[in-house]
Length: 352
Image (cartoon, rainbow, N blue to C red; front, side, top):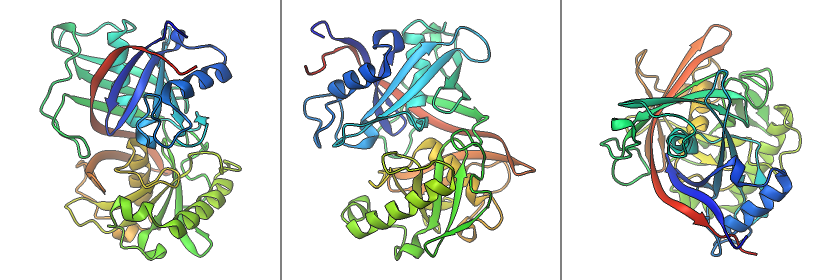
């Protein structure tokens, strides 16, 4: 690989990842994954010899290819790379990196830019769902500058509107994979929901927590990590995911009453590390769960007036999401505003 691999490094939402055209990577998944681990510096807790940032939210890859028509413009495969473990997982998608896929597609010439704004229909290959990403392209060029701020990211950038449809049950096959709004796992009341991301929702208080603990404090609690692992492994079986010991899903989100003007306060684990904020589709799934009568933690949910976004408090601030439910229950649509920014475009050289 002395010639290197063409790569664009982008921040998408509160994550950062390496974006590649599928044609620039090996077609064989095993060869591709080996190459990506060498590019990202996995396995190594510091990822010192690669592009990774030594935490899950910066050890991510987006693989983008033209869709060839139909109901979408491009295909987006998300890959979560381990940091200390030599793993590459396609078991989930990432709504944060999704925020940069449309712009990447325009920059690489896969989609023509509109005169003022561009909407790109993106198939999330991991789940089969379609998302529409809309962003500014004044003069038919992507402009990352703007005045929109999102929690967990310094400064401001241009807004990216993400609209999701068909995300319900995209991984597990149904919105409520266990068949119940709430279940009891080891004496803990939980709600298992999949609205684009399999998530196990439980009350922080049931783990002896306030739900407002800082990330570092949660990360240092090994007993808590063991309890989270036991809970999600059992939940994975109930959700039809089988043995999830080597998977990053389901994620676990502990909830508490809001205290900063939002509708709910969250602490999320991916799968055992505390998330510095919360994932886009993870937040969508948590809100979906709490909107259901009888869900674990529903009594803590301060629902906003109809039509208003739901503020999901997390360690870095608040993420506003919208979820419209239909009878069934069914999910009509979900929306969120993110930002993205191109950080680097060029050639990356993997270790040998």
